[in-house]
Amino acid sequence: METYKKTIELNFSREDFEELYFRNNQDSFILSPILKRDFVLFVFFLLLFFSSVIYSYLTSQHAWVIVITAIITVVMFIPYFIKVLRLKKWRNSVFELIQSNEKYKKHNLLLTECALTLIQDGKEEITKWSSFTKAEINTEYVILTGDSGYIFPKKSMTDDDYDYLTEKIKLHLNTDQ
Image 1: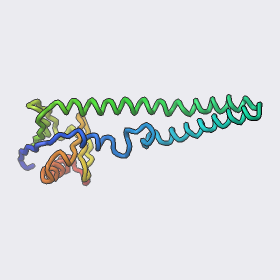
Image 2 (image 1 turned 60 degrees about the horizontal axis):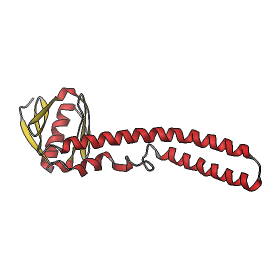
Image 3 (image 1 turned 90 degrees about the vertical axis):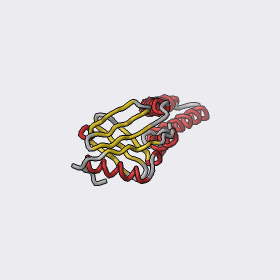
Image 4 (image 1 turned 180 degrees about the horizontal axis):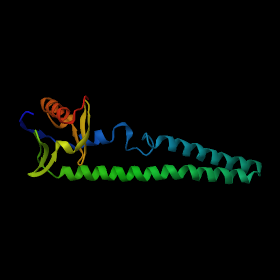
């Protein structure tokens, strides 16, 4: 294997990371792909409940319809509420992660034949290539997962540095992406 050592200067921008983490409405309590179905079902049964209340009020009968639709509405709200809480927890963890990286003034990435090293204001985090289990590479970002996880927006480096980074990741992780 060839010997190499290259330092890539990273330009940290909060907006770049928020754009990646929250793309496709991932942070929306209504439009998130995870919540959309549950939200629509909850709203449908909520409307059905209000319709049954109005119907029962106008006809002065069928109070059991109100009870049944109220129970169904509550049952439909519970999974939606649980997913909202999970999404809120995830959003908070993303904001904390971004804030923890925002406090550093200087971000560099050192690539060698043995490891990837993230250097933030002199603090080094060294991760051997062998500890990465998966890489996701596309035109907007690189995600490395394993013992440590990293996300590198393309916007945070030059095009040449991004190409170099993806080339080395493909070399070490044997990925064809």
